[in-house]
Image (cartoon, rainbow, N blue to C red; front, side):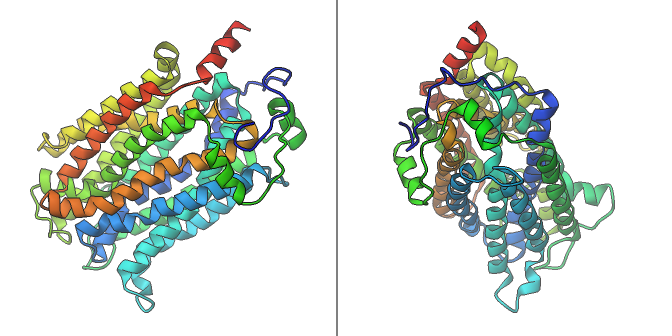
Length: 462
């Protein structure tokens, strides 16, 4: 009995899952390219959009609270119901498609919050759009992790999550740099009157919506999911027939030991990432470019914001390459040591922001961040998937998201006040703290129990 689910047999007596080809794994994960394109636009531009609408830097983290709060609620619910769904589109794919449609609409509305000022101030409309957009992203994203675990044997899961991370990197590379590309390659202006979002950001969001839904459609139409009878051959019969939302709390109370241990790793990792996403724009503008915290409407501030987009693109490019190396590195070092090494690189990269005064040198910092980002998106899920009862893959992947959202909520509550009252309006120290937390994650992962490593050894022997 685990997580409220009884599987009729253990691995003994079950039909081994067939190995999938590279292109089957590719198509299964391709939708994540579109999802991360959308997330990259959000991560790189939401703060500058909110600043355009009048947000003070010390309040930015409070507006960003919408994203993790929504994720904490949406993902377990989607995971719970996707475990119990089966229709003509499958188990997970209906949620991909619905999320993609709604996300595309939200991407188009976010930079146009000023059009709705008859309802409320643009700043609050923008914050509301951020919340809606993140809810839609989470609806589309949550089932992807479960889909990989559903379809792949343990021996291919590192490859599966690494391909997923590679596609995340590709989507984020372009998404992060898109406003800069539209200005410098296509001549779309990055200038605008105060309170109005620049055209290059608007068009980046419009085109991002098209990329988002197209990528999801490729996964929806080119991926097979096992129907219930075939699924039971590979996973065993799921004896848990309860469909009520109350089961989420029961499953939470019975989460596997590995999941609890990974929760601490995720806490440190995502506290760091949230601080980076929220404060990098202002940290680079003030510490590296030497601007005042009040220069939010100046051309120099916009140029700094465009450069941050390039930096975010760099770390995503590095993550795409590092993701392809993860299976080989993990086979040599083991999953935990691979993740720890990657997190050390990320922590060093974030701390180096303080020492580099030339904006171009921050590319070096982002190489370390990219290595960590690739591993954060892959290795915890690889380790986790081996400890979850198959019939609960969706719900536990959703519950696992709580360990991602909680540290972001905490950082969101205290991050802004710390920048103002502790760091004396110098957001660079928020980036340094993020680096320290990343190093803490590198230490804590060493103590995680990884049952999947035993299964892989058994598969190799057999």
